[in-house]
Length: 117
Image (cartoon, rainbow, N blue to C red):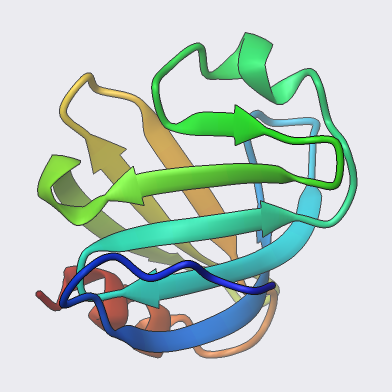
């Protein structure tokens, strides 16, 4: 993914994670966290994402689907851990929840990056 950075924006890190828009859908992709926003590039075209989250956070191009969440819109970041799955749940101003799973890997660095300014 070739990120176009905004003025004074700095990349914190990028992880390969699974986006869980609902209980039955799993979407593999890359989550990049900067000091200003979260950018999730989905690895395949999923038109149903706009039906699940009809918000200003999703955009699509012919090559990929991108989910962008400005950090200023994030109201809560929660971590959920079980033996087989570690997840971070990001809640935004309109109440929508965006869930990212890192499988059995340690989710704490991702949650810390999301929480950082």
